[in-house]
Image (cartoon, rainbow, N blue to C red; front, side):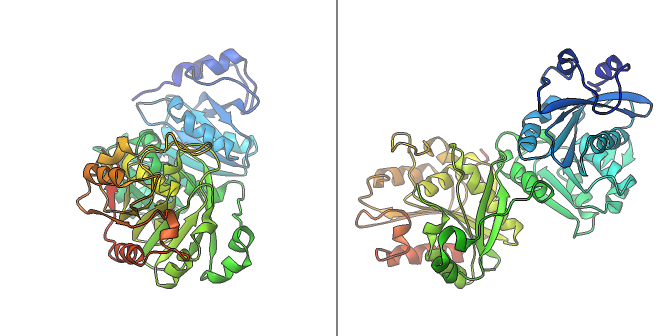
Length: 469
């Protein structure tokens, strides 16, 4: 059991109560990864008779306590903590002392309240996840929600399952399906909680604890955590379809519902959900357009009985693939059990990169003129480059386009299909040079491509891990 915070705690015995200021040298002693600035302060609190020190990032009304796993210190949480603080949360990082981890988590939550947090989320990884469950069950008014990454069933021979049964607040459990420590225990703990309170997210791979928030697993796990926390943070109201796309577009869509969600790296996104059904089609748009460009095709698909999720890509940056994964996860959260991700042009390129780079589960991938190499095209276009990740595309794949398309030619499509590891893959290229969503809607829509895409979506099966190496 690692107790990295013991030396720090003993060094601050003479310091005051929660929120006391510290010299920069005191801050540096917090594992060497933090520095005092206008958004980072120190807090001192007591647990089991021991005085502990923590770092507080941000100034929001919702506080989040991040509890370590046994083999890590608070530095392992730092990138995630900084993103939360930037989104308007007040975040507490601390290392354990010599006492009980669940009582120390509770004491950290109390310190955040004294600093001004009006509600608390207890989040932990592995040992910290178990401590968060125990603390919340023991003190039902302590926290508004719990996030548990890779919890095992026992904490120092204490069975966490009875505490999970008593948990009365919303809880998110995240675990990797090949986690040697938690793959069985985490689902069992989640199942012990009332269905209305618990959500279990299982991601491919073997990442454990805070490692779920970095590397390939972060695309899915990070999306789940950020999206779970979103309603507890500052209010975000996505624009309605009529405001963004105009009244004519809104009138053509069946019951459009605005949705807000967050990508695995913390970038906040918004979109529109149309229709209902067990199968969802997630649509990524072309450059430099927005989600409005997918109409009237999106409305037509929704009226046909398929759930549709459209979203606007992030305004800057190259990780548009993470936006696609977040859209898929949001569709699943809304109730879809089968999800197909389809992108047009730049959105197609992002969808291909996601299918090979990011470890997540999806029923199928459709690329409508998605470029495999955008490194040399156009000023302002993110240089998406799918080629290094093509071999890891394991989900069913359909590529549609035109034979004379200058941006993605037959050679590039043939190479993509040859390299993709999917056991179900095909391409349909038609005569001409039409590009992207023009192949599916409008005066130049191609009947063969529309039929092929419709059949692919209608035949979508179970979710398949893709991009996992």
